[in-house]
Length: 311
Image (cartoon, rainbow, N blue to C red):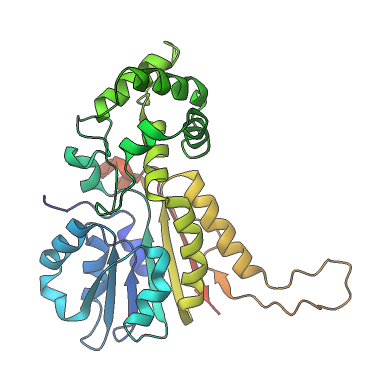
C-alpha cells in the first residue's frame, strides 16, 4: 500500500526542533515520512536522521519517499520505547532533536486490511508491528469481560464500557467476533439508542481503546519520554504531537517532572534533594493547529504539540 499522509503541525515541529545542519535527529514515529523528509532536507551530509517505526510497510515506503535525502537517513525497525538502545546501536551518545507523532497513522486507518478502522470491514488486527502475536482478535475474543471493560473505560474513556463488554461476551459465546464491522455491530447493539444519534461514531472510543491495548501504547509513551529526555544532548529538543487526552497527560507530566528540579518541601530552608531541572518547557503551553490546518486536514483538530529543551 502507499504509505502517505498529510503531516500535522509540520512547520511548528520544524521550528520547535531548531534543526542544525550537522546535527543528529530522530523521527521516532516515521509513519508516512512527511516530517522525516522536511527534517532531512534541512541537514547537510554531515547530519543524520534516524527513522524509527514498528511498521515494516512504513519503513519500506519511507525509503521511497526519502530517496532524495537517503544518504542522511538511517532506518530502524524498533519500538520507540527503545530509543536509547537504537541510538547506542548506531554508536551515538545522544541526539540534538527527537520527534514523536503519536497515535495511528493515516495509512493505517485508511487501508481496511490493517483492521484499525470502524468504517471498513477487515479482519480484527490493529497491530502496528504485524509480527507480534497479540492482535485485536485475541483481545476481543479471549480477554475477560472485566479486562475488556477496564480498557474501554481507561483507554477509550467510554462511559458505556460495562454494557459493551457484556455485549462482546454474549456475542463471542455464540461465535468468535472476527471482523471490524462485526465488532461495530456488537458495540452498536450494546449501547442505548439515544447514543447512536450522537455525531461521533459509536465505535470510535472502543476501537481506540482496543488499539491502545494491542500496541501497549500508553506504557510505551511513558517509557519513551523518560528515555528520550535522557538521550538528548544539551540544547537538544523533544517535540511530541498527541491526539488524545491520555497521551497528552503522560507527556505533560513527564515534561513537568523533568523541568521541576528540587522536590524538597517548601518549608525547608535549603535544598537537600539536590535535584536540578533537566529541561525547560518551550513554550509552557501546547501548540495547537490553526484554523486553516484544521480546515485542510480535519484529523488535526485534536492535535497538540508539546516541546521541551535539554538544559
